[in-house]
Image 1 (cartoon, rainbow, N blue to C red):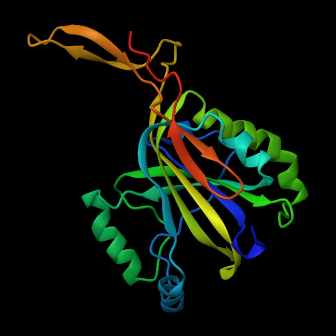
Image 2 (cartoon, rainbow, N blue to C red; image 1 turned 60 degrees about the vertical axis):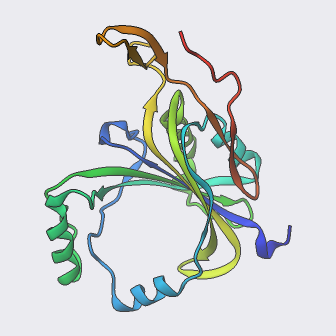
Image 3 (cartoon, one colour; image 1 turned 180 degrees about the horizontal axis):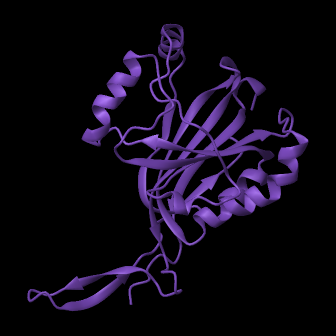
Length: 234
């Protein structure tokens, strides 16, 4: 594959319903609500659009993700999280309009928000993390693994243009989104699942959560495959 079409960056984003799911090792950044200048809006609309390579796929395990990303020649260069605004919450709608009208704000609106955690990986040849970040990288990699171990996700992925400091460059960037977290086990170690009920509302059979798909990441793409040994009905 030519360098003009090679993947230079992989971005993995986790969405959670509660901040307690975010590991302490990950740094929080301050969101900027409604900040977007006229110039940046024009630039955003003029950039080359990305391509969806994984349609939303539920009950997906990401068990091998970090090992596969590292085996493909990428290293972690950034890890942050921020509180994203739930635009579907009516309490946030007027606030978001106001924020845009006044040129932006750092104050979160009164409605619901959710943590979004982002891990960024770069090719070894272009990665330039600080010495301080290198000293924290092992802890952050362990934190990332803890976020998807024994968890199922709804996965989406995109093949995007590669941009460096906002400028489109030769190469591509993969964006992998993991949403709708579904644990395989409870805190006490017992399997999570749902009960089927009969016509009288009595429990009959418990269906345990299980992976139907497996996320894979190679050096040039991401894809999902059918998970092996996925039948775990008890």
